[in-house]
Length: 630
Image 1 (cartoon, one colour):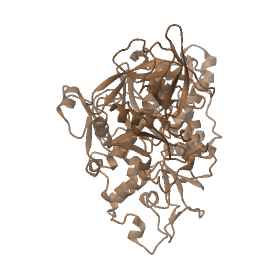
Image 2 (cartoon, one colour; image 1 turned 90 degrees about the vertical axis):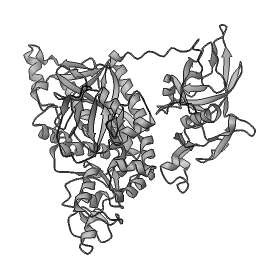
Image 3 (cartoon, one colour; image 1 turned 60 degrees about the vertical axis):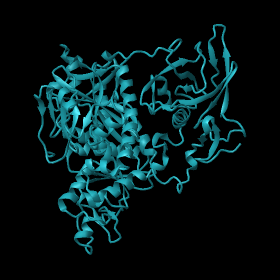
């Protein structure tokens, strides 16, 4: 039987729930033109990405049961959920997991969960059980294959079952390298359920450790004082130059210091990062659909059509981003999402691993050892058909950052050119931007933040309703040999920029109150609001400018109205948001923030920043982070 094209109905299950083909290779670009076209909604409720297995399961449950489970990045993560939400009453209902072989068999409407591996590499799989027998079950699903169901059949396939002598119910695992974890039942009866391991939050405590250099071994000391970064590599040479030597730290007090987290903490960070990315993307979609809410983001009115166009263009993919967390036995909370011009990639993706290796640190693995490979994989998925220009300011930190990313882009198979500053760029009469060698800029990765480009427009007072005409054209339409500013380049309609323009929304701290309203009391989130409310005052709060960077203009205030810490900066004229106070853990006299990095929305590694202040800023040190062996 031939495969069906993307979006074609494969069959219809209970309640009239249609299963659609998710063969992305056959997407009709005229029908699915925008990012929003790939979002599935029923009755205004977001159910997932078309037409993945998780979307079908959530849609089936909503239509037939009136409840859904929380969205997840990977289907196998559903097996760890403990509740669903009734969308009529907004009440959470208990959800229990039963391992394959449990003495409580599945029921109609149970979720069947596969672990990652085999045919379901990295993601796992979920299906709905539509009928249960002693010797088999029928299931309905999406994204297993793309074939039409037999006529008159309200399920996708049959899975063999067998009941053991103790009443244990077993489902056959097909010979595709896949493994069934079990089934999930919404019930208040937990008999025979798999007992989810309780999170031991003491596992979230970060350890401060030191190398063996503090021993009396002269040999060890000599080894550790030797150069250890390869200055024949451009990025490492730039790093040594910027840091003033072969070191990861700016302060010599950290010469022998590193940090370690448990495997459980690393797993929690991965799950949190994947889930939070989906939440931020859902919130971005919501903000762009509500113009009144969008006014809270302080963006120029004339730029909004460009942001919406950027979001709608599904090829405008995010390459990488960074979450900032506080993690300790008190819990795991996200502070913000840096989707645009995030830093510390080279420190985490390359230097900390080399530091750990050079100092012969045992007992674990580099927490950023997969970051570079995952960045390369993310770049390979981009539909780039020409030269990639890497744009940076003339700054030592941006230089090594740019060179590190350039090496990832080149490893993905693209030709790259690095440009410092904008003086060598010119605009042609046709509206193209060219470099000093006459190459037309079509693909850009930048170190500059989008807000810097917007400032060009704000301060020059040249925003018009015809924003497609650049500042240079507005100033002098006949002279195409004038130097360009950042807005002229990044807002040029002929150029695709990474990270895309729409990242202005999730990177803006005005999204934090939106998330709190969309996902109230979510365990990873902190209460946030546009105004300082009584609850925040009573519990302590942090005031942040909506587009502040590097900790500038942040103030921490305790529940008794005492200022715990504050920093000045250049963002004191920007609107503020107020976020629940949840301080960084203080470990060995330093406040420690943990950051996770993503590649195309999925966890790719993590690192540490430390400071004697409670606020992490531009000058806060990145120190090595290791994940302990189990």
